[in-house]
Image (cartoon, rainbow, N blue to C red):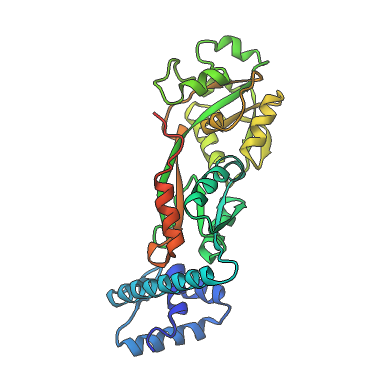
Length: 319
């Protein structure tokens, strides 16, 4: 009986707020509070410390949540097992990420994963980090591959790979002649990506008079772009804000402006003589890519298999 209201208590734990949990559950806050109070009476101890902001778990609450996660894991395993016994026998995973990873990286990874688990059916979901984070919280997706770690109270985020931020410049721009000692062709940088640099990093201030193509606010590269320019002592002249990094790259190739891009595109695209690249230095010029998912206690077996698989497929390891 004391686990009867598990869903309600677990939602308060995830949201760390009775009001937010009530909205998520589509019930009134007084009704939710009464439900949690009833569960606490059955346990004989308070589960939440209501004097903290946000609300936190008591020692009894921590044990309750751990037990609830074990039960959810068993339910997921049962659901998965019965799906395997059904006529279709298909197991499902839903992975969310940016257009870049969904288009250029994840399809090959999924194909490789299906070689050892052929009954898997995978859905790739594109979207913004904020939107996909909410879908991960609500169970709409199982995993999120993104450049930012999520709330550690709700999710596990492991570093899956790393990448560097570089500057892409149309090869037709005059500035490339002045910066010949710094510039890389596509082929030269792609060949060197896992070796020691042969050319020094450029100062972003060298491009202070150029028009920048920058991703929209809410994208990790938006913040990094302005931080890199601020560190170099200028504010970028933005000609266009864009949704996707690949759109920025292709516009660079068309001579529409310069852009900060990820060096992992060199592993995924054919060489082009329409662009030069420049290395950068500083803390904002490199970043980790995280695989995030709900806490391991509630993971199904296929989800745990995928986590183990991804740990062996850390692509694009850089210097």
